[in-house]
Length: 419
Ligand SMILES: Nc1nc2c(c(=O)[nH]1)N[C@H]1C(S)=C(S)[C@@H](COP(=O)(O)O)O[C@H]1N2
Ligand SMILES: [Mo]
Image 1 (tube, rainbow, N blue to C red):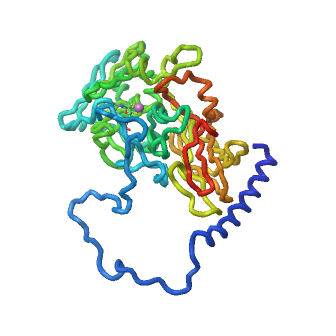
Image 2 (image 1 turned 135 degrees about the vertical axis):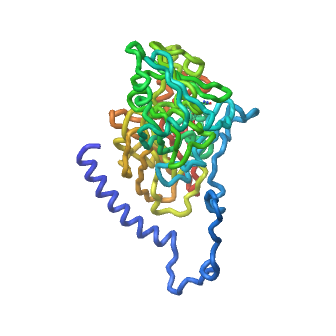
Image 3 (image 1 turned 45 degrees about the horizontal axis):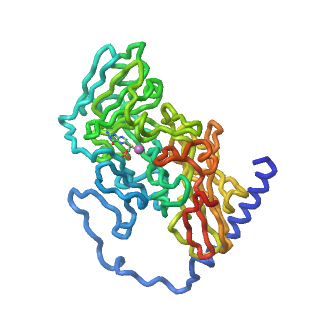
């Protein structure tokens, strides 16, 4: 945005916010003079504290839950996934019971007392850790987004999914706690010829990936806790690796083996899957960074605007290459854009919230968001990302701009490929 445009924009949005909030008061709440009736909850004591109970959300929030894709039919439930209800997520953190799940052969039930993790291969001294050993190491906690590279794979070309949970819900925001992988590898002593690191899971898929040593020493974590409690079984209990900003697939769950080598292993998940077909007929050799992306979570698919007037456009932006620098929003399908407000804290490889006031006139509109990260990378349109890849079947790493179409009744629907 040029300097003058920016000044104009601030004037316009200040006017919009002021005027619209006054309008919203008239449209969404009723004037009242008489005192409120005293409700029954004021007249009798509430539920008492239950001994040793693990708290659960209000029964009125029962609709807020993980769901499977509504596009693909799963017939065997072993290689499966569930998605985060982003339309109900008010902050940058996803509660543990709502973090998306993706596994290739079910969730194992691992006893932390017998679980062992080894570091071996090109190291001076192979090491074996119990869970008690791991928690004794100096620990760190970091906020990061967590996204499966298959996020959006049902909606590459045309709208198939109805809600943002279905289009973007292979995404969560998590506070991870554990030990930097560098600490453990340092202790094992890396052979100077070491260049790649293998991570292997203790599940029935024995899921395995190769990660460059540079990334492992930079910011990779061996974690045992998420959002203030032990990992949940479905997310890797008792220990997993977290590779910040990279596709979820490399963050191997139920971690049992770390091996150092001078070359990658070329596993199925890095050759037959999780890489990208390019227009020249070749496939990318490794494609692990999740590039800059954003999505409007409200208003979003399946929701309905009740009244014209003030609405706050809200959404999430993230980048595997750094921090979010800016998010622009459009309400006219990308013809014009204005800058949204980013909500602090804005952290590296983490979900960032954005908000923009919008005065809905009651007519059709197409809402879009476009994120820019700290490297200057701009989130592509769907047309641009389609051109950059050969779209055939299950294509990964979809970071195109998501359009939501609003009709005159206020109904919001997925308009990917149509706007
Ligand atoms: N051991 C093991 N690790 C795994 C997987 C798996 O099937 N087995 N799935 C991977 C994939 S594809 C993703 S997207 C993430 C999902 O992590 P989550 O279930 O905690 O969200 O775990 C990765 N790590
Ligand atoms: Mo994934």
